[in-house]
Image (cartoon, rainbow, N blue to C red; front, side, top):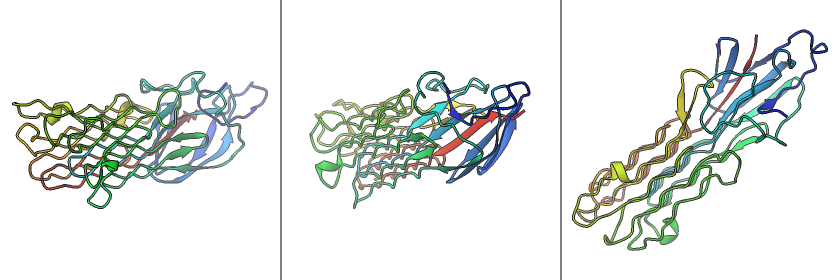
Length: 335
């Protein structure tokens, strides 16, 4: 059973070591006896020698989808793009805590000969605005049989209650504030389900007493978005209470980098109890939510991290931030 994407070769009876030879990517480099290819946009991974088990015949991979946009007007943070990492025993590096190393790729391995393999890198979702309310969903990223799902949209407080819940995706989007309805839920992460999970849920909005509450943080690769919280008689501290979920760090291509952070939820500002800063974005490219009052725009998720966009603040009905694009990285032993 392979624990990564297989490039199988039979060598010469297993006596002499033969190694994978491949090309492609927007950048590539070496790390000791290992080579990596980084795709920051669509491309092709071209294999000219499949190697053998005595040398190398499998690759490790990281596939991160595009993050979702944050919602408009005290909206929810965008969910991070799905994060999927597989590590073959032929590779050595420090992987994320959610890496797949055994069993979980059963039925997903692909036997292949020398040839070209398309890579799709998902774009980030559009920012939520007065026309859409919600942010746009992130696009999927694909390497062979491995697909990571785009992030779930951050909810938008206006227009209409149907925009308020967070959307489902690789990680779920945070819910937006909408009147006194405390039931606005964050979107579900790990949708569709894979194992290990590719992401976590978005945060829900706070319950009354305030007429307009802050939005929840978007989910990240290793943690759910934090729900918004209100309390009468004290300033709202969004930087603590509605942060986006944290991403995951890997050194599949050095140095160690964190991907898949959720976007921060936005502050409201209709009352002193809800005004304040927006929630911080989750580690791994998540954008910060907008502050209120003043209608501060949400911060975009970082490019090629799969980070969710931060939500737009209120008063002023500000736009959310766009989601960050995804990335695909492939690593293998080349000598």
